Image (tube, rainbow, N blue to C red; front, side):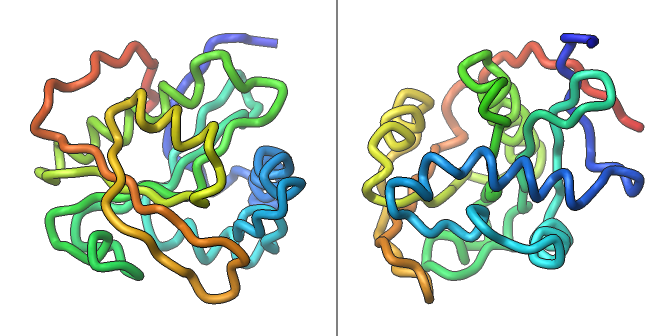
Length: 181
């Protein structure tokens, strides 16, 4: 198997059921902690609907999709006062397959969306996660994200923290390969 990681847009030929399975697997540890993130058990139809609301980027090794993130340009966010600001870009459905975690793929995906947000003239990049997901919050903090506000999403058993990264800071020098196809 080719071990080179390439970031690219989700292709129409990519399998939505496979993407959904990747999300389920990546979020399983969080589900086991009692956090009912949408990605823990969403249907293929929900995956398709969610990706239609932004730009779905995948990390691929050869033909295998091993990671994903949904990027929303400034002005496309909603649900919280910070997300709804017209100068804020956001990321969602951020996942790396468990067998490929802790290998820098998540960092590559995050570097990419930070660069995309800068190119879109966003002032900040925002995301949300459960306030109880301490490992994730610590990782995001190391990446420059800071707490902005709390949100309680309908149907969720946990309160979310909205984290945001000021994009006026120096850009991260990403080393990822990008395939325009």
